[in-house]
Amino acid sequence: MNNPYIVLPVIFQLFSAILLMFFWFRVNTQRLISIICSLISVGIAGWLLREVLQHGILTMQAGEWQAPFGITFVADAFSATMVLLTAISGMAVTVFSTGAIRNARLKFGYFPILNFLLMGLNGAFLTGDIFNLYVWFEIIIIASFVLITIGGEKAQIEGAIKYVTMNLLASAIFLTAIAILYGMAGSLNMADLSGQVAQIENRGLVNVVAILFLVGFGIKSAIFPLYFWLPASYHTPPPAISAIFGGLLTKVGVYALLRIFTLIFIPDEFLGTLLVIIAALTILSGGLGAILQVNLRKIFSYLIVCHIGFMIAGLGIYTELAIVGVIFYLIHDIIVKTNLFLVSGLIFKLKGTLNIMKLGGLYKKYPVFSLLMAIPLFSLVGIPPLSGFWGKLFLIQSGYAEGQIILIGFILLGSFLTLWVAGKIWTEVFWKDAVDLPKKMNVKYYRELKPFKQRAMVIPIVLLAGVSLYIGFGAEHIILLSKQIAAELMEPTAYIEAVLGSKSITP
Amino acid sequence: MELLLVILIGLLYASGIYMMLRRSMVKLIIGLILLGNGANMLIFLLGRIVKGKPPIIDSASKMLTEVYADPVPQALILTAIVISFGLQSFAIILVKRAYKITKTDDLDELNTTDEVYE
Image 1 (tube, each protein chain N blue to C red):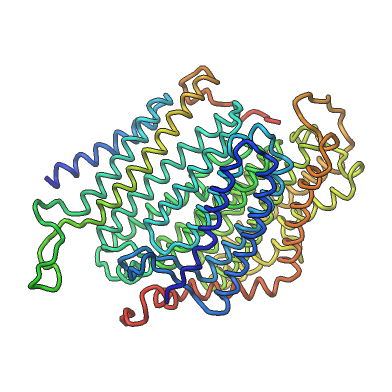
Image 2: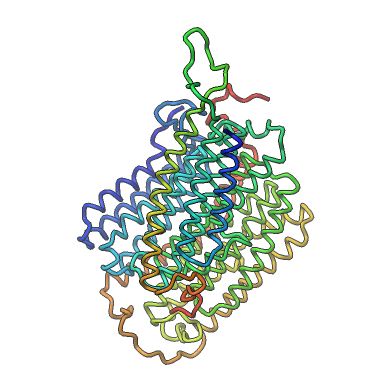
């Protein structure tokens, strides 16, 4: 079946980016168009998820070239969920940007590039072809390069050098892996590769390629020995940009790892153990790094690394229950991390600094804001019934069932370190007496902003906090969705059948 | 021919990684370019190096039986070359900007992001 409308999320972002380029210097028109387009894209993504849940996996063969010869787009429950999450955080960041990003940056094409970035993300989630996945990754990184350097401050440029280098290296490794994979299996279609790779006799070479994919996606998703670029760059661009990076860019890497390691390379004992060790060390180094930092956004950057570890842990355990945990945690993490970086942007506008030693007295002065900011902060820790709790519960259950006691220890340690950091942020930033800060001339404070900009900064935080609360309190819906996704990932027959047609399944 | 290309690819990867490990930003860019070219050559090699064997099926037969030059990797290389061209030109401009701002070519001097940045 050909369902060309499943590429609508991609096409629509392309359309809105091009439309925005016609209003290059008219920033207010750009603001209005971006907000409208982002709302429509949430609608499209929600509708796509509903279609997929009702009709099963939908596919599109580009130009009616049947798989495995043409380029395939596949929307299964996992892809559609990721597209919806992208649309929601994209919408929140767009609304926040209308208030928080300066006109000078907007005149360099901030909104069109943001839409190109979202287009790349949607493409990466929907494609069913591994070389096409590479192309979408390149679109994502080139858009993110522009976003990270836009404005050209000293710290931004220095952070960008580290970010650009590591991403280009990751792309080169990813491309090498694709080349060898094509040489071995003679196909690029992921569903076709699933069968082809299983038949290859030279298992040593297959493992080498799997490791190359692990390194390539590992750099992008910031796993243990490869994460150093992330805390060195994510705190340099404006908070709205950090929010979309922290919420989505590392998670594309996790998405690709989950796709590759459930569909093409089924982890054997060696790879499983390797993933578990990497996960434990990622949790440890991210958590310890977060404790040492004093810059709020750097703390959040290290927490990204720490929580990527939880997801890799689930992939290492590799049972259906563990994958349920990973998916649930992924859904929760995208929303919460986006929200935390937006919160840091709001705190900066309120106080003019992000150094937690200099901050203080927020609770006394802004009690409502503080309670609002407490929702993402404590969802992150996973205090039941907030959203972070359920994912970890499944991970620990599955780890216990598989006898991975040490890994459970690391997961608990990671949660404990997160709690410590959240408690430290709460006491230092919210409870501590206010410290006298000199007024900065180059910062536009929240009070001085126009009312529409003030609302534009608060509304997305309220929205995302609402989504987090829904994930926590309405967990049964999300658990059902995660279970369906996990079942589809662990038993990819339906996916392969949807792409290649039922005749091609050979027992 | 294959053996020569294999040696060339190995040299490109090795020198690319060696150049990336130097402290100079310009050498970093050169390393990235060499690495990208190595990856492109690798794809080219995996499309089978044969002379005068286009992938055209004879009117008498139904499928290709002989060894033929696979056209897919060549399409892939074209895409990869275009992408790496764009990325590398971005990286060169970025390094130029970084040199203007920081007045140094030494990667070890890029410490602003580690300071307590407000």
